[in-house]
Length: 265
Image (cartoon, rainbow, N blue to C red; front, side, top):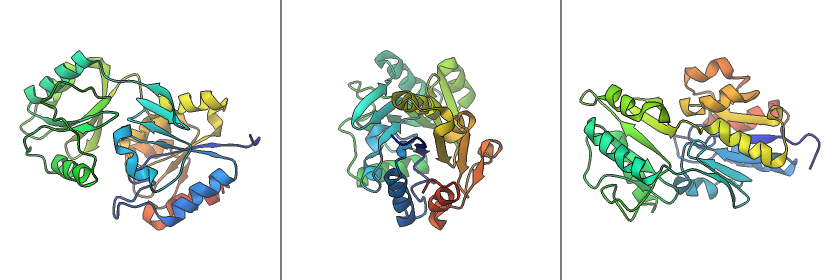
């Protein structure tokens, strides 16, 4: 281990992966490879559960994956931490989503689960189509009771009772507003920040040695927690008070630019 080794944590969508062309820029791939060659450790830290990490694994090589907003941490193919919502609680969540006139996606380690019938939410249906197109469709629909999940997302509109649903969840889950009626729901004890701590403990590293890269509201816990916070050019304003470095958009070589300026490569 080098004495100045750092641990770098990257969000995927809008940070490493362009939401414009759905690809990782060559400059970002080279920057990540350069950081690892310099002795640093690189981790994905994503809201995606492990079932949706596959595409990024083919685009960039890293040392480990923090998945599902801290609900699963994998380093060198070793599972360091994993949390799954208890089965009975998951069944009640499914009922409550429909009770309060919403729709959702149930995100598990193996698959993401959708309702059998199509919904009124265009964004949800686009996600369904993308997952099925990429060959990651689940063998079950959420009407089946034979699976468990780690976190979930809900979609709400003027017909929905989001406040009622929030009361039903209570303090067990954090509801992250992703905008446009899209909400990410994560077990309250876990986040991208707790995932960072799991990794740092494994390597005996200090929080000061962690660098986080992000752009959206589900990155807020790691921005609040870390000392070195790199904010992408296109970002949610909630992250701005915690940013220690503002970089360019991912499509404009923002990852490479930041890593060079911070002397990580």
